[in-house]
Length: 99
Image (tube, rainbow, N blue to C red):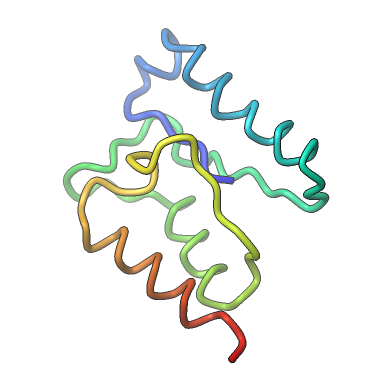
């Protein structure tokens, strides 16, 4: 599960946004998921520009290695602000599915 807010100000002052994102974990558990990793390394980091997001990068690698069964985010914009990053994640997920 990927959790992110775009700026340190949002992390400090928009606690509802973070709470809603973290609540997804509880929902996944209620739906029967048992092994859930919360990737929140990128809290306070924008997806715009050339800002490095170690959590997103690690998640993409894990997806590509086939170690991830599903990826969840409350809003798709938490993943990426440009189609290249989004497309990379989708392509890696598709290629890691056993045929």
